Each structure stands twice: as C-alpha cells, then as structure tokens.
Image (cartoon, rainbow, N blue to C red; front, side, top):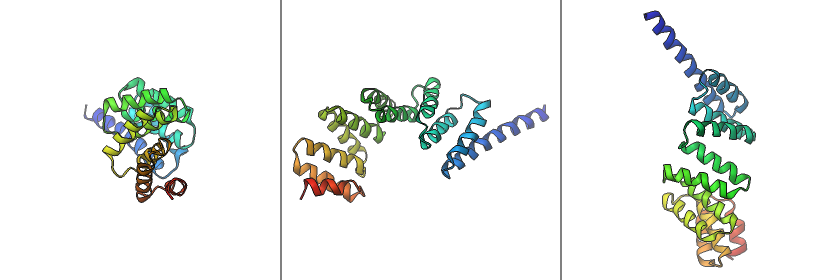
Length: 194
C-alpha cells in the first residue's frame, strides 16, 4: 500500500514538473519547446484546462492561430465559462473582423467576471469597427471606469470622439493616452489637436 502511494505521488510530481517546464519555456519565449512540453503533459491529462489554455497561448505567440483556436475551444468544451478562453476567442474573432462573434465572447467574459477591462475595451473596438459609436463609447467608458491608467481605452475613446466631432474631449483623451505612454497618440494629437 505504501509503495503504491509513493509511486502515485511520484507520478504526479513528474507531471507537475512537465507543466512547470512548459510554463518556464513559455516565459522565456521558447514557444515551440513549451508546446512540446504541454503536449507531453496533455497526452496523459487531455482535460487539464490550464495546460490546454497555455498551449493555445504558445501557439498564438507563434502565430498559429488555428491551432490556438482549437485549444481554446477545447478549454470551452470542458469549462464553458472560462474567462481566459472566452477572451482569447473574442480576440480571435476580432482579428478575423467577425465583430459580432467577437462581441458574443466578450459578453460571456463580462457575464462571468464584469471586471475584465480588456473585454470592455475590445468590445468597444468591435462596436467601433461596426460603426456603432454609441455602444463603442459605452464600452470604452466602462474600460476607463475600471482602469484609469488604460492608455488604449483613452486612445480609442479619443479616436471615437474625433469621429464624432467632439474635438475638446478627443484631444483631452488623446493627451491622456500620450501621458500614459501611448506612442500612437502623438500622430493623432498632431493631426487633430494643434
């Protein structure tokens, strides 16, 4: 009995080392090696959400977006309310210019955890791309309400205000974005606020 407990504990210790190795490789930017490590671990634990998601992120870093998408969908098949996988799928559809599909995933993130700033920001950008400026503004405002240091939210809200001919508010937002470190704000300020 004791021998089987030791073997059992050793088995899980080895598996844990494999995922830690994958995470370490990911953090070092060695995404291909991280994928190999994660895949090795998933061979015996195919429903491990953390590892499956992390492998998807590694694929994403290598611009293998379809493989990343498969892993994110795999996570959602196991855990439909997973915030990270829903956010990643929203980004996937946003990058594919399928804004309505992206919004559906961002809404799911917000439904599960209404404090995820990126969900509001990207939902705002999706509405902005569709020309739905009212909903874009609502979501940029929510992103800023949750994070007053979010340079992207100020930048995109400023750009939206430019489109709405709200020069004073636009320039205020663009200057705030620049003050927070946005490099993209300079050109917009030079064009619209001088």
